[in-house]
Length: 180
Figure (tube, rainbow, N blue to C red):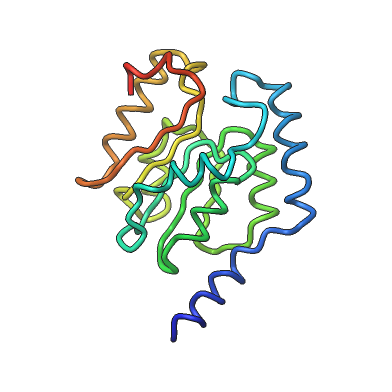
């Protein structure tokens, strides 16, 4: 299959409906006010943040990517756009509304949306046929998570990364930098 056919096939698989896109900001804001400790910001991630966050990824080598706290999928959509056709993205989200939104709005067989905690990353990877991840990307607000839970998530994350894998984190607070 030539490159243009592969690109078209990938683009077709990752369509997100325009209705879903227009409603994502409202859904995000509503959930921020309902669960402010669960979200790090009142608005979804900007394209500038997304570009900088994803810059270190070697897309040619990335086979398994895990995303913690995908929310309404702003970063998820860009990961899918850049990913290899044979790669997998496992998005772990604790908020059932966001899980439902992502499942309903994203048509891409490479995406596996899991309702659960980042603390369960090893088990979730195994359930999807993987032992390790090339990259783990996190948007969960570590500053609002209890120290013991934060420590467990960080330890589990390190345990599932491939030898040269990276843990890419963005935070809106510098309070947890020593832990990272």
